[in-house]
Length: 315
Image 1 (cartoon, helix red, strand yellow):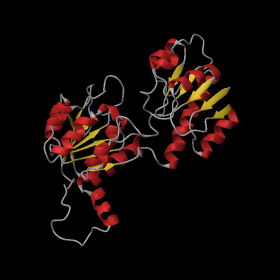
Image 2 (cartoon, helix red, strand yellow; image 1 turned 90 degrees about the vertical axis):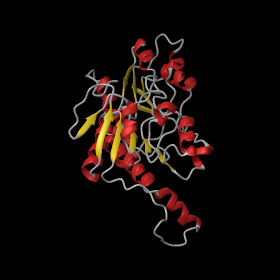
Image 3 (cartoon, helix red, strand yellow; image 1 turned 120 degrees about the vertical axis):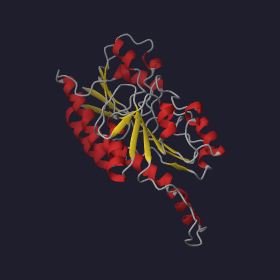
Image 4 (cartoon, one colour; image 1 turned 135 degrees about the vertical axis):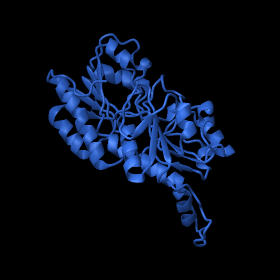
């Protein structure tokens, strides 16, 4: 079976793929355009894409009988794929949940700590030669232990963040989730604004897509208290970036930690110029073992499909 892998994956994954498929590796690091995606749907039996590859509705337009039968996404988020349009053409879509959970939760805690304790600001001070030594009122941040963490989106990653915060830092955890959930040691509230108003730290862990686009907007951010810190490790467009910048500049909130951006990889200059923001280059799953696990999970989905078995991780 002809398989297109749209971005270079860890060596072990590429070697495993080559044993079972006729692999074509796309030798570019930028995401695929919709035109490239449409052409791939016609040429290959299966495609292993990842974040940003444009399999939106326009990629499926004017196709009647594409060669592709499976889009095995590398990653849990699949808002770059129009799953409904794929299904209409009898194309299955899978993803890689589970493999990303702990690594992404770890990055959320890293952003929380760095932003609360102003670690990025301090590191820049040392590197620039501006640090003149310790004194009692220098870079006073928020002590995170014992504070209230609000989580928006209590799926696998949200629950992993909650576990780390509650057991590791003694934080009280409250959360908003669109469906009812019973999570040990955590309290579910009825609205995002309620969670915002009562939290010292907010972690966004919602999936991307039309239903969650700008779910955190100017009005939602206004519910936060001035000392609050917001962290986003989910998808950039669930947060109105312009509204966040306004809140940070005006002092309506104390800080933000971001691993994802609304127009990724573009990061607004206004964000880069702010000292009260921690900015990561989408590090959520950036560990070799994690990326290998994601790759092998995607290959398991591919193998199951072509062997006629039930798909382990169908979207």
